[in-house]
Length: 253
Image (cartoon, rainbow, N blue to C red; front, side):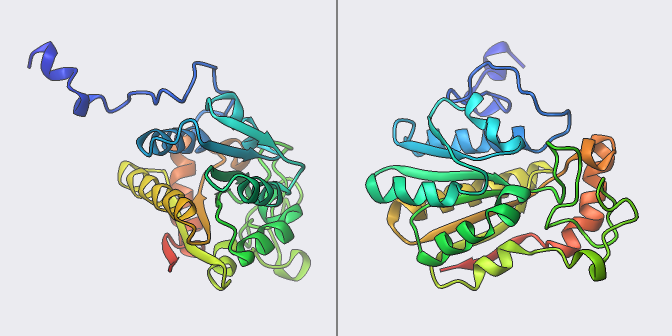
């Protein structure tokens, strides 16, 4: 194989999207956030929306996405990203507007904003990173924490009688009249990454076509919060998260 064969565009598997800058990422090794960042950057570039994309980052690990993707960003108060995205998209309908939120932000303090924005059919995309724990603030129980799963605030495991049941936000979103596309994906393997990218692209295209609200949930790992190695965290996710949060499209209007 010659050097010319190696550097063919189709062989540049790990080419960094031009939207991603050279700032060192702060995420823990094995975190899913970096992979999803790359997918978002690739999709925006492939759609030619570099100058028309506006991302909304709220609070939590996810907030720092603005450090790595060179597009326009607006930071929202904790949980209020869908409300801010609604305002921006209504005022500037030609823009690709999306939020990037973790489970604590979206499914706890931001539950109302999330549900109402989706139900109104706002032409935005919500990208939802679900790792079933509060990663940034010390590994506390999240609304999405599985039954029996141990966290800093439920050290003996989540108990339904004490803490309630895990919240399936994508399932709720799929029942709302305003949603056009609701899907649950992951990024733990190459085939999964390809499906997740396709889902993000579809959601973004729906947003620009005025078809309604879109929710892309990414079932993810937090190996530091789960206190596992990256490899063990991926295995645990496949064995425990996927049965409760099954992957695939939940709604495609």
